[in-house]
Image: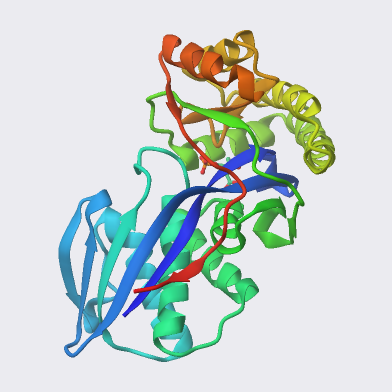
Length: 321
Ligand code: PMV
């Protein structure tokens, strides 16, 4: 039996622009996805993923090409692609357990894909490098989602805090410590593919307006990388404020996110911004230790839910089973 776990993620800078060839910065967080995989003596694949409503879902190996229920898509597509690529086959029992609610955009789908592929490689004795794991997992995720830069897959594989360019053209570890972040959830589940498509349509309609914003995003990511390396929280906060402004300009913020962002700033955060596709989900703020409690209270007061998060954590790992 093999047990693997991979971290969820938070994007710190560069969302949306990263879909269009610019860099972003992503950090792996302490909330992890875990998968347990075992071979079976029959030709069945049995999946238990209670966090996404899948209980004892059973299919035969010959049915792997059919449509799966929503909660089973990433895990079973990963199995199907793995069997195809490495020309192996076996009945399997798979259990997944997510250390965070699937309502948060912490990258559960990418983390589960990475866990299954890594776990199967271990189970079948196939050596797979982190680069191969990234490429294969990203291809699998993209096959299902159709859109996405792959930054969440990179965080699940490599962990740490990464300077990342679309599709993994650059995946570079940034030398940082854990960041003092406050994360606030708006209570709204975001729909990432819809927002990515909306930005894409705007870019087609107004290229001369949107492209310069993406170029500014790139400059800001480069500046943020420096600030992270220097542990300059003040500059990081200011860059977060710029960043939220740019994301608002392309139309992906919303009233609920703005409320939390402004409340955090008012309560003394160095800076705050939305994190991810926008339209809800989470915001992040860089906060001095002595201001943390104040900022968390301000987020609650503004209708949000603070989520305790540690950044810069370990990537994929085999757990003791
Ligand atoms: O919504 P999230 O947290 O998965 O972040 C999406 C970030 C985008 O840049 C909008 C999309 C992507 O795949 O990079």
